[in-house]
Length: 270
Image (cartoon, rainbow, N blue to C red; front, side):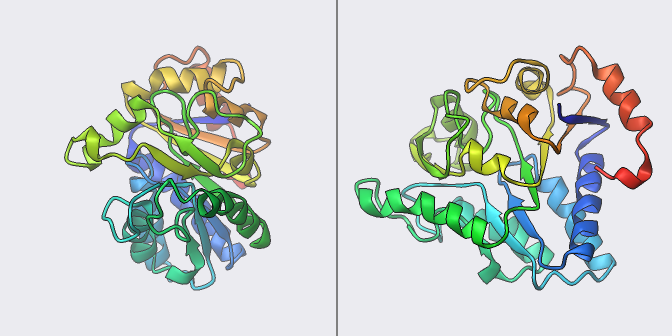
């Protein structure tokens, strides 16, 4: 099962992630980071950037691969994940933009009708991750319906990077990034599959607020099911779930998770 860490707030969660990744980069200067968008990872990226700058960590060789991208948005659109990753990760950390990749980069707003081009993008992305040596640490958020990346409920646990139709709830949740207008939110995306995500050597899932409590309950203590895609983390040998008290509120064994983390040897890290 995943290690569960219950924290006071997003800043504490960010500090745990930031220390973990900073230490990784010190030990492996060409580390490969799996990157996610959304609101949950932002404090983690801020914490990592602070450590990188304060400790003068060389990040010139660090590589990055994002989880997903909307289809139909040009790369220059402010809400494309190409733009978002560069704004929230590449620039604050000082990464080399040429070493950070997003699934839709080769598409650059190609329409859904360009089937051959779009169909080839997913396998090519998985091949690029493999050629880089695989992802060392993959940061994840979680949707209220249990999706990770854009793997909506019902996604195959054996899936690779591919095109998916966004669930209506996901489009409703993401409308806040599009002037609260769901009609501006794309209907399709290209996303790393569950199988792609599970190949990362360490998974770190962040979730905050009561709105994520049900999804976290299903992820951590429910059965493994394609209808809660994040539950696939139970199959991973090194998965860490960092959540606040509200997101942890429905967990039956939260007292044990606190006890286990409090008595964990410092040398184990996360």
